[in-house]
Structures are given as C-alpha cells and as structure tokens.
Image (tube, rainbow, N blue to C red; front, side, top):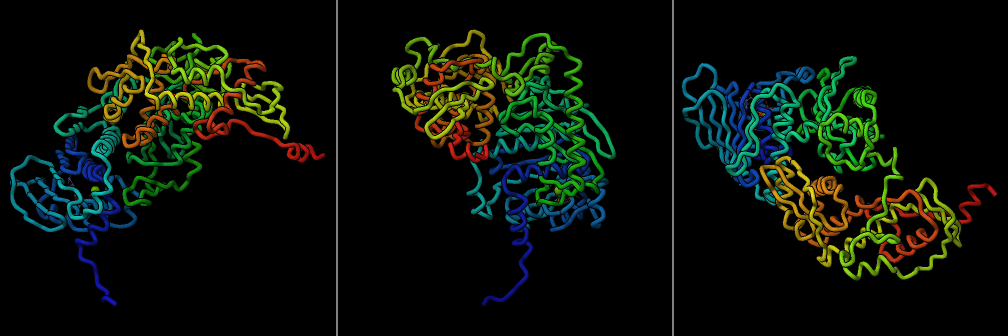
Length: 593
Ligand code: ADP
Ligand code: MG
C-alpha cells in the first residue's frame, strides 16, 4: 500500500478548479465578480476561441498592492470575509478565496495590478500552478488579468469543452448577467477582436436591457416593484402575450447575484399560468433583495444555486408582486382589438398591448374558435397544387382507409372527440392527432429536401441578442436549405423574407424564436442532419396546427384514418398521448356496476 501524504497546493488547486472552473465562462464569471467586488466602474472582457485560447478581464477597481497580489493567489486568501458570521452579512460576490489560485493552477495566468498609493504596478505570472515571476510593471489604477491556454495542465478537461460558438455563448450570457446586475458599471465585451456589446453606465436596468438585448425586448417588458416584510422585488417582466419556448430568458438575481432558483422560476411560471399556454415561458429580469442571513449562497461551489430560509414566503411574495402587476395592466386596458394569438413580439403600442393583455396567447382562455385546420389537411386542401411533394399530397388527401372500428359519437369542447369502440370508448385529442399527422408529413417533406418557400410580402424583422445571433448564423444555411429565407441586415438584426409554403406567415417570428430556443438547447445541432430535420418538423408541427371550431363525423373519421396511417399514432410529436381508451371493464369499475 502506498503511504498516506498531504497533497501539494498545486494538486489541491487543480482539484478545486475542477469544481469551480468547469468551462471558460466560469473564469470570466470569477474575474468579473472580482472586478465588481473591487468597486470597478469600467470593466472590459475580451476572449478568443470561445475563451480556451485567451481571456482578458480588465478593470478600474481598487487594485492590489504587491503583498495583496501575492496573497490573492494563495488558497483561501480573501479580503471579503474574516469569520463564518460574515456570511450572514455578505455584500460581495466572492468570499471563498478559491478562484484565483484555482484558475492559475490550470492555465497560464498573468496578473497586473496597481494598488492605492503605489507608483509601480505588480506583474505576476503563473503557469499551470507553477510560479514564474513577479516584477514591476507600468499600469493605470486597477487590475488586468489574462488567462490563456486554459486547461493546459489538465488535458482531460479540455476534452469536455464544447465547440467555440457554444463556449462563446456561455461567456456572452455570463457577462450579460453581470452587466444587468450592475448597470452603473460600463461594460465592454469583445470576441475575437469584434465588439459583442459595449454598454456605457446606465441609470436603470431597463436602459441596460435595451443596450444589451435590444429595444425590441426592452419594449416587451413591464417594470415591476414590490416590497413586503423584508423582501424587495424589482425588475422587468414580459407583457402578457410575449412568451418563449425555453426558460433561458427568465433571469433571476438574489442580492444582485445571478442565480438559478427553482423557487423564483416556479413563482414566475405560476404567475403567468393563465397568460401563457403550457410549455411557454415568460421573459423576466428579476432582482430579489433580502437579508443576506435569510438566504444561503454557499450551497454550490460556483454559487449558482441559493437556498432561502423561508422558501414559501419568498414564493408567495413573488407571485403576489407579479400577479398584481399583470392585473393592474389588465384592469387599465380595455380590449380594443381582437388578439391575433401567437406570441409574436408586439410593438409597444398601448392599444395592441391592451388587446394582448385582455386576450393573451393562452390556448386555455380562448383556444378553440381561433384555430384553423392546418393547411393541406383534408377536407379543405389549402396549398396550391404542387406545393407538397406528390407523395405527401397523396398521403394527405387520400389516406388509405384504416378500419379502426371506431364509431364517432361527438365532440366535447371542440377538442375531445368521443368514439365508441369494440373494447370500450376512446377520447381523442384532436389537436394532438393533427400535430402527429402534420409532423410526419413535414418530416417526410424535410427529409426529401423538397420544401418550397413562399416569399413574405412583408418581411418580418427580428432583433436578437448576441448569443442567439451566433446560434442562428451557425444554422442559417441549414434553415435556408429547408424553406426559410432569413437574411442578416445589421448586427443582431435579421429579416425573415420567406418561410416554407405551408407555414402561416404570422407564425414566422414566433416559430423562429422557438427554433432559437431549440438551438440553444442543442436540439438542432449540426452533427446529425436527420435529427435536426426531425426537430424542425416537430417544432413546425406543434406551432402550425390550427383547429376549426367544429368538426363533423366525416372529418373525424378521416382524422382517425390518417392518424393510424402514421408511424407513431399513439403520441403527438412532443410525446403527449393522442387518445385515451377506457375499456369496458374500466367503465364497469368506475361506475361500480
Ligand atoms: P474571493 O473573491 O472569494 O475573495 P478570489 O480568489 O476570487 O477570492 O480573489 C482573492 C482576492 O484577491 C480577493 O478577495 C481580492 O482581495 C483580490 N482580488 C481579486 N481580483 C481583484 C481585482 N480585480 N481587483 C482587486 N482585488 C482583487
Ligand atoms: Mg472572487
């Protein structure tokens, strides 16, 4: 047996780096937090190759005198807390004293800093945890840290890094989070020599949102502010009718620290419960302030998660605050025009918002009459002949009759079709069934690469942020090959000029946003083209289906017949059941016969 020993500092730091520094964005996070903790009002972040080659964070904060600078690289060296009780009155982002030594142990790390009262700056170079030199350098007040060749001393970690655009997206997201948290500091973010955003000092969060997310998003948001029993909430929430397919744009902070808090995100989702259909999420930039003693930030080494001492109080407070704000809006605005449905960004015209507030995109509030049968769905075959590949037309128009033995009885709520079957009764979800049929049809169309495009009379402008822009640019060619015409016409601005011919033009923008959500979650990755096309068809099918208010027996029979010609008739493309069957014995049991 080998003898027991105490690990060297270098090894300990590399192990800690495994927890704290999982990717380049984590380096950026730690360095930006340090700059903010040092009181910086100007922070510049630059990186190359997704951060793996080079990261520079430079600030005009307090800087460090030489002894402090040397000490800052020792493990557990921090100027921010002295005893455990300090955790209960924490006013800084950092407190563990781990970041700098961890980063320096897994990269080439160069620090230049000038502390108060010093004339010469200090430069320290460490490579893979090995001290190289300390010497004088010229520099203005503040600190500049350059981290290059990340993970050079731990090749195993390099392998876990994703593509440059993905790592880059994480960095951009991270810097935006802190830029939002501290609008009073000016931020510049530079990727491979190109400015991703440059935001001067801002007075408000709303101004900062406009600076770094764009006007379109800023205009889609409502300010919210509330205080009660030591809890304070402020920030921006999306107007009713504006939704997203993912939770990425619900951004929450606790005492200025960006956090992933289930309590906060569920409170938000719940507040919008009646305003957004299932699977859609609001946008939010929410800042919760509370006594640091009432929240534990030391749950996770990277401090992304927090735990509240009183979860239910926080949750109830947030729901109340958000709901009150949304209700105020609803009460102030009388409906002036029928809502168009969908969750396209609506411009900030009050009249339009009033309509949206009164009748949001909810598929629960006023779902059925608004739906149209999906184009190309018989009986009315909408698309011009030749628009769908012939094979699909045939499958759609004259589906071989499948004898299911189901006898149509009637339609409840416009959605649930009741059938009598040999085994008992069946309740069919019309919408889910149409989605399945439509999905299989589109998938075939995409796979055959025979998607034709309809040019939009009015191209739809879409403003994106830097991350989604990067993602979209990466997949632009793929989309163009599949019926979309999207052109870039300015930094972070795109114009949808054409959509697949079966798509309703009013779906162009919401669909694009759904698509971006999927891209962000890596569901449309470039690796497997078939899977990417399937995902595209899935998204399109879930969005495209509109149901007419009523339907007759012939239509229902034809629907069932088409459903059972599908490869997977049992579920819709999202995996939800298309029908449920109650057997005779189940019915007998229920009625206690
Ligand atoms: P923590 O932030 O948890 O204290 P770090 O390892 O991130 O630990 O930093 C160690 C110490 O180095 C900090 O407590 C701070 O005193 C000093 N420091 C780090 N970055 C800066 C900076 N940009 N400006 C001034 N001081 C800094
Ligand atoms: Mg720190």
